[in-house]
Length: 208
Image: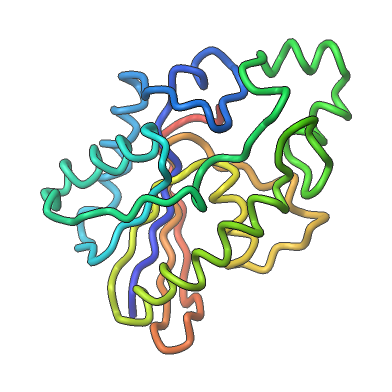
């Protein structure tokens, strides 16, 4: 049995402002760093053999805080653009709640949570799925099949895409899946098949 741990980064500066962040490379807030350390407290019984993260510093810094708290700083992480947050295109930097007020709840939720509703100049969740899942299959699953415990520190939409794949969530049900900052999904994986044996969710952060 191997553990697969998915962790959303802690609160970022733009999470705190309610702004769509996407590929903008912003820092964690101090609350975000505390969320990362709180996430680590839920993982104290796991020794990791592999770590994966995005190219964005809010995910990398979350992973660093977790590994420091666990005393596993010798573990080198693999960073990839495949695990980057969704590109929000023309919505990037805009305040989510102002956009909701301007465009209405229906369009706001379609942009924010739907499977393949297009964002002007940006990516859909399906687009994120189509880059994140092949990376999972080639690299993360290979680590699990080698018997390694794996931690993935990434972003809300990257992780929603991976959870959809792992749990075979229907496209119609994906809008209801929300992963908060600092939230931790812990899967027990059967290494030979890659099959999920058990799942646990630990909440240490928010829903920004």
